[in-house]
Image (cartoon, rainbow, N blue to C red; front, top):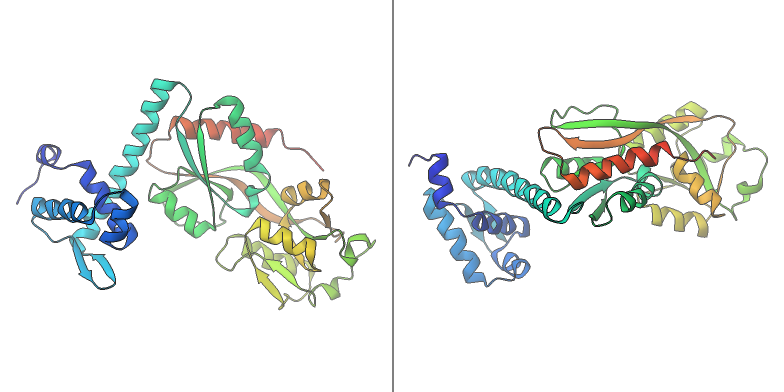
Length: 313
């Protein structure tokens, strides 16, 4: 069977592709039917129509659910791109019909979650009050994969020092430094000087091994000439880290611009280590070759405005 753009346009339904994409995302016909608010027979019929149209099986069914065939995997990749473009079209149509509106899905990392992004979102409310924002938090590897797949519009946080992916475009906003922080009730919070040799024996909160920030964390200890701690909790959750610091005697590594917000609130103290240590560059990442939606363009403007207006501790 030979296909052409015209034959696909005549016979292929976008709803069928959307159902197929959800079936693979959910891992079963039943789970997809519940998410789509459809009956399972209706979902099965849609998949069957796609299989008949292409003359190829799309799914391998088992007791554990469904897996794509090789042909189904190829179709799924194209379906994701088409559906991502469809969402971008919806944003453009909404912006055209309702002025500055639409939706932007942003992925963020610890570096930006507590400082840069909140200030940017406040600025976005001034620029485009009708834009709906969905924020997802994670590590670079997960966020960049979702950005490439079209599930995210933009990722805000630490720019990787080495990124082999040709599908991503990074834009730097500022250079960040790293500091060690403790809760205000920690014994080191009021000391005039810190004995560096004691630090390695204490309990630490460090970025997860999969995060870009972990490399900077390891360099932190090398630069101070102290052993890497062995009693650690790995976390990139700002709320978890903050709770641990307030209620325990743990130490955490934190970007300086994130830490200063909690210092001003009277929750944390920055340890006086006698020097500033580099962390990396903070900015945002976009997928190359994909049109930036009007809502995302407004968020980018807000990010630049927020970064330009950043306070100095």
